[in-house]
Image (cartoon, helix red, strand yellow):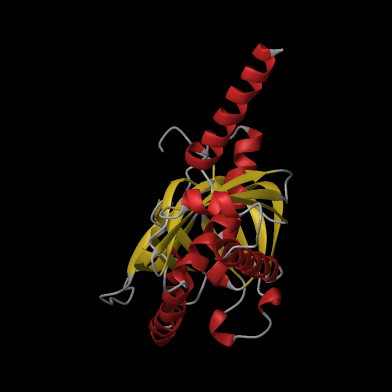
Length: 299
């Protein structure tokens, strides 16, 4: 009997020590999201970037992110772990720790609603509502394999942050249109954008924004316009409806689709636009076809 009591005592002491000093978090919440991991990844970053007291996000991979929020003499570390459930749903496990007052929080949490718990709960409820509202702003429809036809095109080039993709395109849309129209160069297809570099950890991209044209002699020269061949490509395809600022959500959906199908892709998507974003209007009526090229022997 004494051995049992002793064993229970040791177990209780060990559990208490683990709870107070070794447990890697003070608070955990789980959120069910009706979207892909990539959308959540981008919204976590956007949410953090709009907080005055947040440090830069640390991304270990697409599904694991860490950040710190500073409140007076407290530093709260958030760890976001994203797991896909189905083709259209994911879970988000959020682990939060007060780096300076962790043992005190753990002692008091079972007995009262602490300031740490109230603040953390409010932050996560705000984030959840932001996420619910965000996924209503666009639609992604996966459409399987497709072929992109070869074309010749006039292009501008962009290098910057992923979020600024649409802004750069809106700036160059009238430039390309006016230079080609003034020189009587007719379009030979729908404007498109090809990502030529993508750093997912830093959300930095480079792209060519292109108007398809016929290859002719005497094309107008402009310091911001280049001419190039766009080769035929086989790709996974998605239909995107929504503001082009967030059309990159479909990139992640296509990467996940490729992973599930065991296909090796370039990770450099192509977007074909059927709506001029400078015209405004209901963004859910905007249409773009998004392609994720399959790797070939030359890639």
